Image (cartoon, rainbow over all chains, first blue to last red):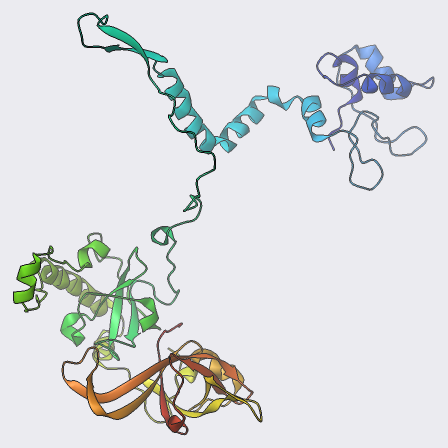
Length: 322
Length: 107
């Protein structure tokens, strides 16, 4: 509750746009018995800031008659929000203006554009050259023409702008699958092998590598669900992985040929490993192998990555600690 | 890389059975709280047939066929589990081996 000091209200009658209710209240407080602080106010002169006494001479807590307070205990305040805004006159204060400008930051981006657009707006009519000898060479035409069709019903909105497309959805990664952690591949060609997570890709896939020398697992994309994260971690902070993204690994499909050719050419096009891929494999692997060497249990780690994950009699995955 | 399970029967009351849900008994899982790991995991009923068919991923024709499904929820207190298959399991699979794979992995 904002309470304006009593001395101020006496002189601030011009500032506030409130009705006469405040002024009448002022008069009633100044009863016959003048409180000592009010005596002080009169002696010092109008406009002087005097600290309000917290207790009346009788010892009760003083309620500032001009302040905003609850009317009963039902949540209603004496002055409404708009009323209080005007009373506090915050719109005059630079600090408030600054805060507002910040809040409206995003909005202003749009509005400034539209404001600029408005300033750059072409006039409603433009001159356009017209052919023909006796047509007056120019004609004033509307810059923005009125639409020639006004639909009677609103068109069905097919796609809400707010709803995000799948491509824009945030991708989340399991906490156990950080770059540098050793994972167990649980499905696919390399099921049972252990590999190292190199990077999180923007599509939600993981980029892993054996390294290829160690266990034959190449630089490959894999979905998180086909991978079990282990607690073994490598430090891959020195590996340069900027170039690697989904585009790099995307399958390159040849352009569609003629239908005739398709019938006769029954050969499947084998995907050839590009030299670029081979080179990046080598680069990443040397960096990862260096990280393995730097690890405290480097010999054990190499052996570990070479080995396969196996389940045998009595081994229960739900009881294993990975 | 799979956990062994047995197809013990269909979901049923005493007198009615519902073949769309199968009950599986997983090896080594004996309490309800242990089944948490297996929820959502893919399961496969693998069987052989007389005629050879092409299996995706294999080049040669194969006699092996698979019915895929997934573990949906726990069943009872003692570690049994319910699974739903894409097509209902044939009753001759009763008592037979079902493979519960380790994917989709959540750890």
